Image (cartoon, rainbow, N blue to C red; front, side):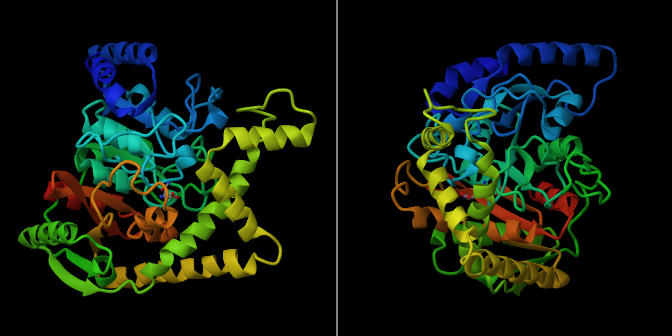
Length: 446
Ligand code: GLN
């Protein structure tokens, strides 16, 4: 009730929730009370959690931030939300996001932009901006997010919370509406690494309903939180501290890294030479996969359908033209173009080759160091509306996050300080399936 009241009071200013599920939350809270009374409490029992509105929740509206799905009530539950529910989590509602997770500022939502709780004139980051803002404002204890190119880490950084993008395949994508399937990964967002570890404990692990789910043994994410960091080697890639990085953000990150030295870590300068290529590679691969994934929204089976279609083609075209926002339409067109005959080799195949190079950069670097650190984003949260008319400036915001998804490795955003009153996130990137290590490192710092 406390959280529902806070949402009612505070969220009209933030717009972080698309749906608040009061009744269901109180029902689940009651069940949690009973579970506690009968001595059967588990880690998340009674914990109020919000879900990014692209996880399917049975019986609860799931919009993906799009007009296309403004009437979609899923008949089934995603694996992530179902596991959190089984662990006793109470679902407060569904959080706002950039339409189909395409964006870096949460300004691409059909349900309106989300505002940053630290300064209402600034963006919360995106695409999981609703989840980040809700946690920062104390409207939820933890939330789910998804990260295709930074959508957990960048809003976490902008809102001063902690977020983890797990290794690709660590968390099931079943019921997580697809944007770019080879990059999408769900993960936890919360105030601290310890809270993220509790969420991972419930969310992660093999799922036979997702063919890309990894059967690598699931970790205990809580067991090593308190391990000392003596002997840890941290790589600092020079490309993460070059042109384009705000000088004060750079200073905050460097100060944070010094703290790790005090905790017993050794710092090493490294290089990830293909970083610059991550933007063009990502912005070919992601739209290509999106153009294919989003072809299912045709007005036939679910979602928005135009009024009085003349014939089938008219229904397809008008339903999609009315249902999708500008950014989504743009990406569908870019993706369709990149995949079309005659262009496939020049764009998509080329981007996949670059992806391989970026992955090899990380694999090689992680032979010499345990983890890699750098900024999450080149700036702190920017002004609402300040980049909406300049897509290239918006895409450049993703420079430090995209390559992690192209490589498939895990990475976190951890609050590291403030510049002019706005939070700055430190990014910690690790080897495949090193989530427990990342959480340990973040926890020692926090
Ligand atoms: N900003 C990136 C994009 O617009 C990443 C979004 C995401 O991770 N979902 O595609």
